[in-house]
Length: 423
Image 1 (spheres, rainbow, N blue to C red):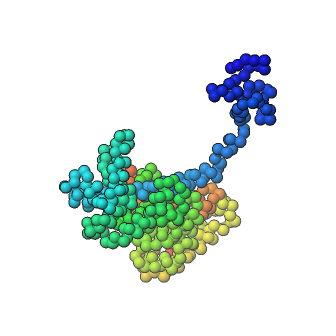
Image 2 (cartoon, one colour):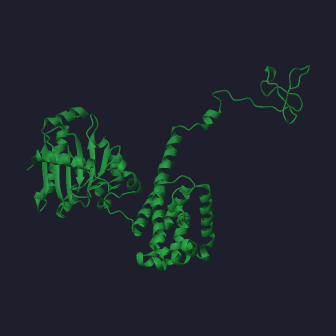
Image 3 (cartoon, rainbow, N blue to C red):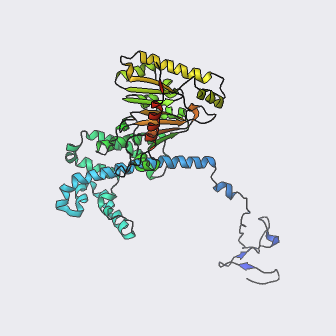
């Protein structure tokens, strides 16, 4: 600092004179000495920088949506890449490794793949030096090949793979469909629902072609996705949660729930999900094809119906008439069957606690749709759980602790034993 008649002056390391910062130099309108550099003062609290950097509710919602879609896509891509890598290793390693040892991948790539295989070798060496190889099993060139490069190895050596797969075109088409998703996810860009759905279909198809498809029988009715396969054990046997019945049917139509069932057990007040969304003609065909049906309605003449009417604010007799109509409709369906004994209808008088539709609940491929009854909330507006019966999808080698499916199935059997048949 230099002292003088005009007071204290500050000089920068470059020799330029800085503003004194006193009251007389506040703001940009005051002229400084020649050669002085004007410095902006720090912004006061509440200035423009806050709102510019902040994320609002809509921004956070968009970010979460993007992350959820990208996460699902990444899991599918990860499974496909790991499976394809394992298949390539199983087929090509016995051919090239006896002659080329650890360089068998480089030899398999050949002159056509020289550029990308050498790039993979270089990335592997960098990962070694920087300590990025956390698992010794990944310390090989094959682990550093991308999905297109694994595909190239497969295509180049198709005669080696042909005995294991029916159609090369099916494999290539499925991998083509994944390429858009792979590029979007790798660059952290927005993924549309249409592209995500295409990627999930292509991945499931490819995993099935490569011999890693699911062996869960209920997958034909409710497909198992990659997320359920990896983290399904966190939620017992709950594989779907919907805020109301409308959203359930939008994603899981009644035909997908009940179509092709060999056994159908249902308990509830009026069983509207079945009666109003699955036609009587379809029920007749289902029963004639061998499906055993047991329907358990709340007795429309019981006091429990009157209490439910009061809870929902309905007119007296409104709910009981609705239940009666549903029962009459099911009786007409039963009357059209050659074996009415395969289509049983009964009523119970206890307080209804839930409605449940158990499809093929006696086997390993069961699906259940369950709703609890809430005060002042109609069944159509109540949250819905979708359960998968049988064994758990994930960690099936661990002791089975059971799930919600068995709980509701046992409740149905207890209620059925205490109920009365409808003639």
